[in-house]
Length: 115
Image (tube, rainbow, N blue to C red):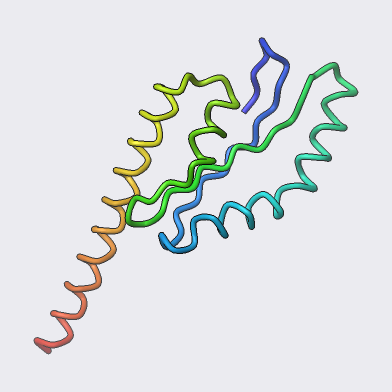
């Protein structure tokens, strides 16, 4: 994502791991994209851009949100209220996605039991 006004580049990574793994998932994503962020920083600085920054949005499959998710969103210019609302929407989407997967699993299990 490019912010032409502030001359910033943001790499937004969204992940939905098991709830027990939200902290580890964030750490893994930060490590994974660190070289890309460094390369983007160098590339864009030569063109007059200020920064390249990673924003990692982690929402557990059952809705757990690490504190860093809200602060990362605030780091791209969202107010605390906006970041909290965005996180709440992401939580809802994650939980609904989990429900769909579970329903699909039970439907498949029931159809194979009936055969």
